[in-house]
Length: 201
Image (cartoon, rainbow, N blue to C red; front, side, top):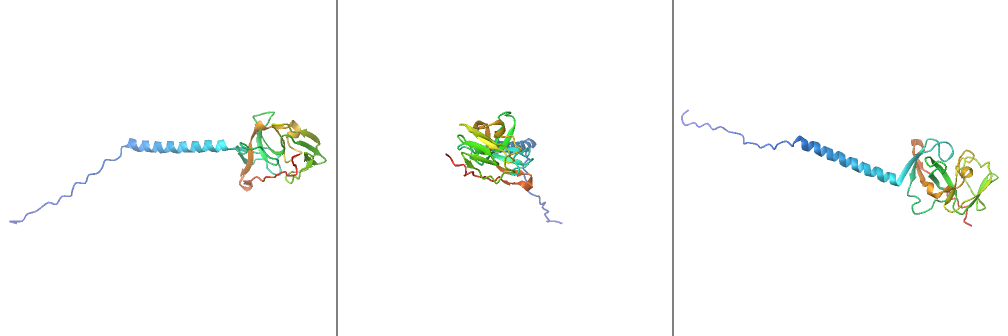
C-alpha cells in the first residue's frame, strides 16, 4: 500500500560472558581437596599428640575393663603432675617396651607396699578396693624407690604386674586411661578411685 512503512523490530544483542575455562574449575576443586586434607591431617596430629588409643587385651583388669575394649588415653595427664594412687595408667612394659600394658597405680615413690592375708597395704594402711575381682592370694613386700610406681591389675590373681616384675619406672608411663569408646554398650568414663586410706607417712 502506498505510504505504508514496515519497520523490522530486532532484538537487542545480549552479550553472554564466556564460560570459565575448564582448567580453572579443576584447579578450584583441587585446592579445596588439598585444604580439606591439610585440616584433617592437622586435626589428626593434634589428637594424637594429646591422646592415644589402646585395646585392652586379656582379663588382667577385670571387672573394671574387659578384653577387647578400646580405651582413650590422656597423654597430657601427667605433663604437669604425677600419677596418683588409684589412677589407671597405660605404659610401656619394662621387659618389652614394644608392648603396652594397662594397670592401676597402687604405690607412689617412697611408698612401702605389702600384700598380706588377702589385703594390700600402703605404708601400713589397708586399701579399700571395691574394684578388684578377688582378694590377692599372694604375699609380699615392695619398697617403691624414687622415679618408680607400683602397679597392679584389678584381677589380682591373673595379672602380670609389679608383684611379678617389680616397680614401674615413671619414664615408661604413656598416660591416664580416661574413657572406653568401644564397644558401644561399654562406652563411658572410667571411674576414678582415690586411695585415701594410704596416707603419706
